[in-house]
Image (cartoon, rainbow, N blue to C red; front, side, top):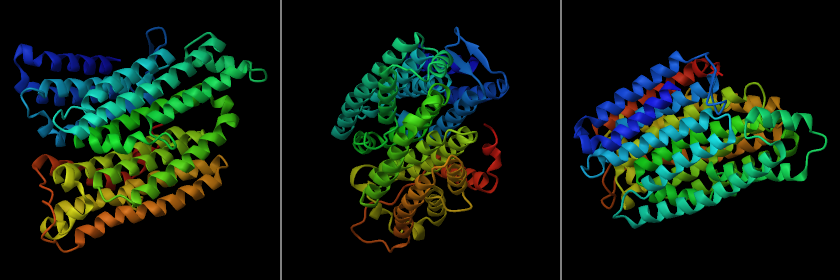
Length: 458
């Protein structure tokens, strides 16, 4: 809880930095604050304390995911220095990012449906502004508007579902709802099932799962690249942590009813994301569809709902987010608009072999190639799903992974092609980007060679 308070106070301090005149010290202050927050999470391990009349619950699950999104935010800051150069927007951007992180931690640690809603809104409202923060780019303005409209639409489904669940159980508390559903499992009113379905639809919108994924490619492509990187990693991790906590705590007794439906959604999401990613020539849009596909893999952990599901989703989100940050670091170095085409990477391996090699490792991890983290994350996830009896879903996942290998390897193949005169500017890998790419490569290798580092945490 102390960590959550520190992050919220950092956001307020960022808002006041312009008034109080310490904007030059803002980024070092945020970096020190995030490191301190990780230390506070480590100190809270194994405490499992409930706050505010059991509205927030910081058990090991919440602490692990909260520490992960904090570390990911710190890594994101390494490549985002340019995003905070403008003297007119440095304070605002920093505050919005910190409030996003605050909302993410509330989403991860909630034990009351009202806190889930508050966390989603804190996160979403900040993201709506960040998506449209490039005021002179029509694509960014469009992305912000689309994200706002679709986000509000999804929140409506979620709230309606919460209302129906509250109407049946008389409580917003997850454990009390679970007790009600367990005691009355034989004669639940039909509107309880409607409430679960509506909440499921709302959350599927939030994680951009098919067939509720149509907003994601346009929003990801139109938003500033650094904001897209934040949405694709930190935000997605928090959303899946909240998704799993809700269904594992509240609705596990009804898994026989919603499990098959969610399995079909997961299969559709994996296939749609990977097939459409193959067709993309824009690197950023390809990563957007790749993010949709990975959402399908993560949904498999919720479908499985067994003793290793929490650890599997933690390992998978860690591996995916770290590799994605590396990919987005290179994408950001490419520049905007026309320079985002994959073909502009031609000659990258010849001109900048070290940087190109680091990008190759990120692509290989996303593709699930051993011995990198992405392979063992998928292996552990598939093992858990097979244990729950969903062999057909694993076969679909393997097929979709093979499709995914094609477009990840296409990026690697393109870097080996000779450069043409009409090609755009090669990525200008700055010091921050190079540091991040190096960290991503090291972490991907360490997590792949020693997967037990994260596998046994939850």
